[in-house]
Length: 145
Image 1 (cartoon, rainbow, N blue to C red):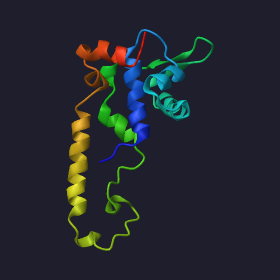
Image 2: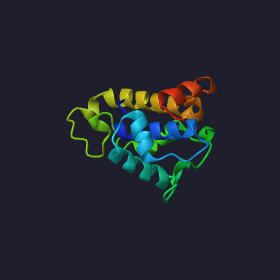
Image 3: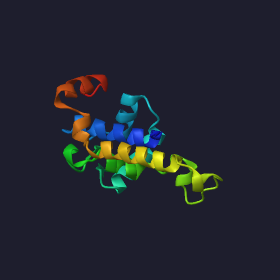
Image 4: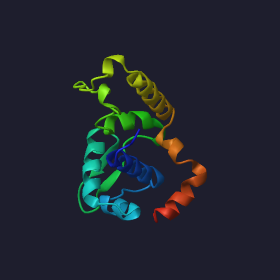
């Protein structure tokens, strides 16, 4: 299973906001902290806002913050909502053009693996991603002051 950059960036934004929850953060500072494109993050932030994970405040002193507690953000749910295509093999798709699909066992095996992958992610929340013991390290690494 490959998680797209979009999902990766979504998780990074949420991690950043969870670690520094005492103030609003800007897209620019998050982009700078991770050394990633501000343009990519703008799309991610827009969708995270639409999906209810974050709230944005417009204006000169604006920014964003988590809309809910990190313990209420399930990693598996987030991955399902941000991944466009969980069809890890062609036979998962509605337009399956693989000739051997009717007699091949891969679909079942990959389906089982995908279910196990998602079941594992469903056991974790954003709070689990940023254990308290590592909070100060994350703040330092991300250069959050």
